[in-house]
Image 1 (tube, rainbow, N blue to C red):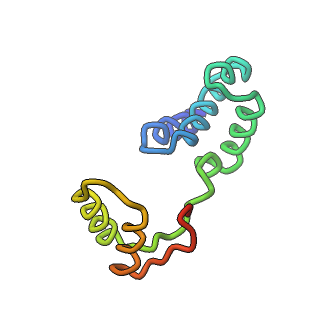
Image 2: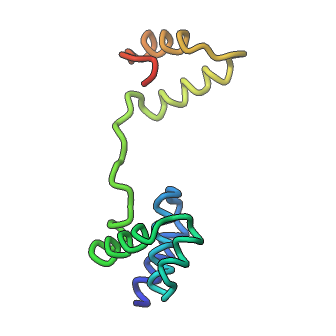
Length: 116
């Protein structure tokens, strides 16, 4: 139990997504003896949320409460991202069509949809 609490505390103090933080705090409170109803009211979640993430933590550890989706691989390198951001900073105003053209001509990134 102490090891689990220390693991959770370390995870909570790390730079994590708010959803993961809420899960970790709910699990920590449940493991420390707080009742689910109390936890759900304090965090604005359901009793099921508390029980589900506690079970995930107990069976899989920290990996059980982490986000599963990692996102897709970007089209630009870190250096190219920085270059685009600098280009945008030097603009007086931003225009989506101009950005799309800049990315296509400078980096070969073609957008299929302007909503993406």
